[in-house]
Length: 497
Image 1 (tube, helix red, strand yellow):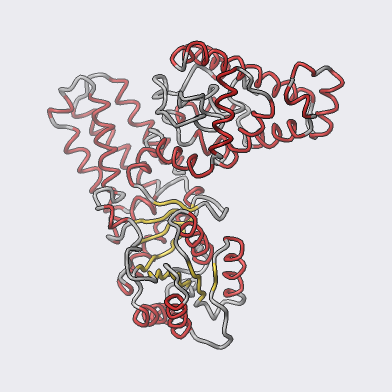
Image 2 (image 1 turned 90 degrees about the horizontal axis):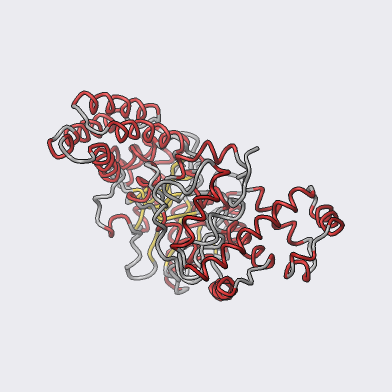
């Protein structure tokens, strides 16, 4: 997410932190580079100008230039202004969906064709149903695109969310009224209306959306926009807002957006808060938008809060506690490692977890040159699945013939089996050290372990991470320590290619 922009901004700001004392010329030169980085990220020109002016005004003040660590102060100013640009100054009730109303709360989804409205509608229904415990009804108002209503029905089945039955020949306004009535009579908490889109903004589409809004008076009017279209998404949002009075924006494909221009410009240009972001193709890949967390990711400060929240939703608590007990006893076996690999994949794989850890951006080249592909998790899980129960519980049984059999069953080389066994041995050894010394005694060993990767933990992690609960994160947490056996599975002992 926003990798290109993050790399550029951090390159500029890291130069400042290495300088020690700063002059006004140093700050001015850095701001010119920041300006170019934001423009190349497709951020709207007026937004860039306002941002740079604000940062420069604060950065050349006496509190920065005369401080003990002026470079760090500038980074804080950039961070604070990024948060403000993304809408961080808004009250929580302005960025949250309006659901505290007399049921049903009606949410109208608008946007261009291909922006991801239908998929986002189903994802939102699933999220509201599972996380907020709301009873949700989906209704498709798209009578123009072939099979659009059928698509929402299929997605609703996948998400296990109810959909309004299709009545052939019924027009959008009539469907919206029927959905609202069905929601009221059926005891639904939320009704989501998936409206029709066009390839470009046109009067017919706008009028149809306005008619639907007038007919059912929705509590939320959410524009679904594709983040990859950059400034086009911002322009579309501006046009929709003038006709529909948007209450919020859902940005899709944010996970594939290396620039971030749409996210950074949207709030400032339209005045509408970004409420939701799509971060993947799976039905659960929809997140609430948090300005400060996104700013942290852009400046490589990590997003541990989101990681913990995601872990809390996906981790099997009973299994985590069972593994934690085994870790304390030093009996962490390959069966447990297999369970941790499954949990790691649920969290988004190594790339998903590492992307939320502070300072990992500075290690990007080392990680890219190492075998840190998420396919490693798949291969490792396949290797463990090819073992017998006895082998999983007692890795000492492995000899050459057993390794060949497992490698053949998993479709990998014997070297990969050896790497997995070595990784497990290192993790098991660290489990024993955690039991004897606690987490603090582990960090020195982890620093040595990171030698193959170019040196220790990422900046910002040397002092450890917050306590993440029993068992910590899968592949990340030791019993009660918040940190696990080193870094995610595949990290310990990984060699450069």
